[in-house]
Amino acid sequence: MNIYESAEDYLEAILILRERQGAVRSIDIVHHLKLTKPSVSVAMKRFRENGYIEMDGEGYITLLPPGEGIAQRIYDRHKLLTRFLVLLGVSEETAAADACKIEHDLSDESFEKLKEHAMQHGALL
Image 1: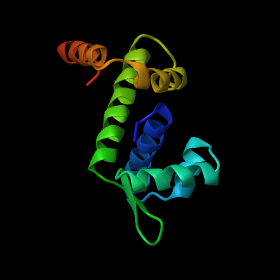
Image 2: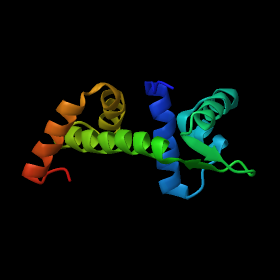
Image 3: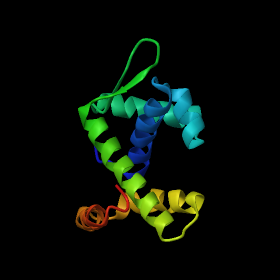
């Protein structure tokens, strides 16, 4: 299964919701991403079939290691990019929205250099 931007958004949403509320169900993802129930249901089915998540009998979703890795990678990018943009003077809301766009397309090389810069200057981490 190729992971596209929308799939990364779903996995990141599961991670964020898990951090906020502990347990995650499909309806939580619907509300968080402002999508339809059928869209989320289809995505969760694909993620289960491809080993990114598991869902228990009560509908609670757990990220499996491949899904966790993707979600954490995207969420780490999102947090660092948001902080970086805010430090440049961008409003929190705009910074978060822009980070969401950038996090998917930024190369690993560029992200690592941003992260190195942030660590050297102690400004972001």
